[in-house]
Amino acid sequence: MPRHWFWWTMTAACVVWYSTITVYVAIKGAADIKNMLARLSATKAREDAEESTNGV
Amino acid sequence: MTNFNWLLDGSIVGLYLLITMVAGLMVRKYVGKVEHFLVAGREMDVYLGIASLAATEFGIVTCMYTAQNGYEKGFAGATPGILMAAAMLVVGLTGFVIKPLRDSGVMTIPELFEKKFGPRIRWAAGVVIVLGGLLNMGVFLRTGGQFLVLVAGLDVRYLEIMMTALLLGVAIYTILGGMLSVLVTDFLQFVVMSAGLILVTILILMNVGWENMVNTVDARYGAGGFNPFINPTMGWQYVVFNLMLNTAAVLTWQTIIARVLAAKDTNTGRKVYTRTSFFFVCRFLIPGIWGIAALASLGPVTNTLEAMPQYLSTAVPAGLMGILIAAMLAADMSTDSSYMLTWCSVIYNDILAPFRKRPWSERKGLFWNRTIIALIGIFLLLYGLWYPLKGDLWTYLGVTGTIYLASISMLLIACCYWNRANSWGAAASIFISAVIPITYLVMEQLPSTAATARTIGPYYSGIATYLLSGAAMVVGSLLKPQSGVGLRKETA
Figure 1 (cartoon, chains in turn brown, yellow):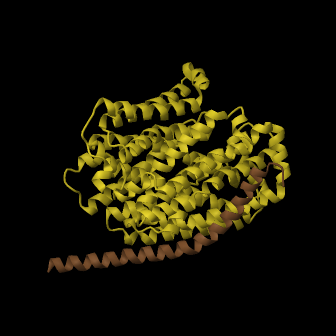
Figure 2 (cartoon, one colour):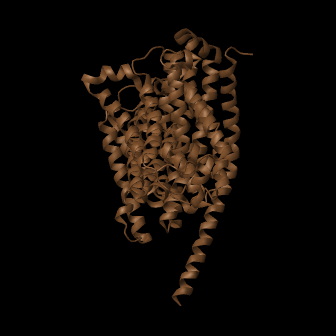
Figure 3 (cartoon, rainbow over the protein chains, first blue to last red):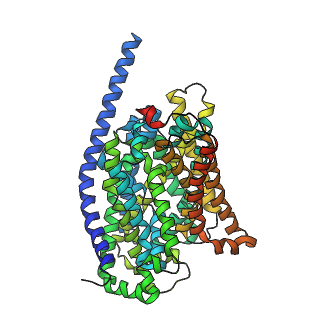
């Protein structure tokens, strides 16, 4: 075990965890953006349709 | 002399800036309402939230002060990160405060206060939040410019131009796309920033070596470089102050809370907290390692804030240098955009609330939000240029942040969980938590009181602010008994 094992463990955990989470979030986050923009588009289309119906 | 290569590294940085600006501008077409602009229509999901929160809470300024902590305090300097991660994990797991806050459907924290304490407290809380937040953010630009000038080896005369260019780029996409642009650019910035941070850290660990860093800290700071309680510049008061500060930040710092409020539901907000919590250890430890590597390689320097960028300018090879600068630009831009949007949301939603006797049209609301962001940008430019920073950066940020963190955290906890809390207690709490840190800052600046300020120190002053702010809430509320109905009953 290296000297100052607590800080060694924390440093190793940071490098491993951060590397893993970066790849994972990069993949899943891109899907989140796609879905978020799709939901916003759908909401806007629905609101536009309601407005035009109310206008008629 | 720096390893920055204008052709290779400059191209990497230019490509990053181009992609970010295009992405930030492309989503502006989805902004039709103030709700889209301020909270992204509450459509944010978990992983986008993690990316956005991590990118926002790590700017160049973060990198600079945490590296300074590593340089000046050794590994013990990463203690605030561990405390913040623990606070975030507990809050995320339990839903403490953030659950009732998100369930209430508000866009800002002061909006929730109006339900419990009335419109005056909402307005006062808004002023305190913006005051503390803008003073805090005031040093971001200069510090970011300092880093970039040093690492890229530019003439220091270009610092102001660097600051202005940085802010202008960020302001353009934030003004046009609001929270939607912030979220999308945050995502890109998270990926670029993380890649740069990880690669540079691995390079440093390989080149400088773990044993070398441990020996340097040991020789320079002894056991205090590894244990904050026995470090002469830290001690129990440093740990307690940072525990209070970081817990309050997790509960009320508007840029963090903005992710909970933009989340598509309460559970998503809580998951963002629990899954991002360990990032806050990385946020302090990774730049801390860079600071320790600077100590091991450069030895004693006169300006400890500049030690890390000076070291990186020669330690990082061309190619990786471009990735590092793109990463730091990413970190800074994501922080600046989120912060500008956040303080804008409070100014519009809460401070300007008394001026909206009738609801404004979405068009007028968007116009004012965009104008406020532009004005915040101008303020930051002027304040960033003129304010001379005294003492270390983390302490300055802690003291200015405390102006609002102490009272707003007390108000929020009382608002959510204490039926007896009322406007007297809230007003007393806000007053106390603004007066103590501002007095301390003024005393630090005046030659006649600077010595007294040093004797008291920022940690005791900070602890006193949190304790007295809580006491003021209790005493003030008990002095004005009321038959108010608690928030839990209202939302039930």
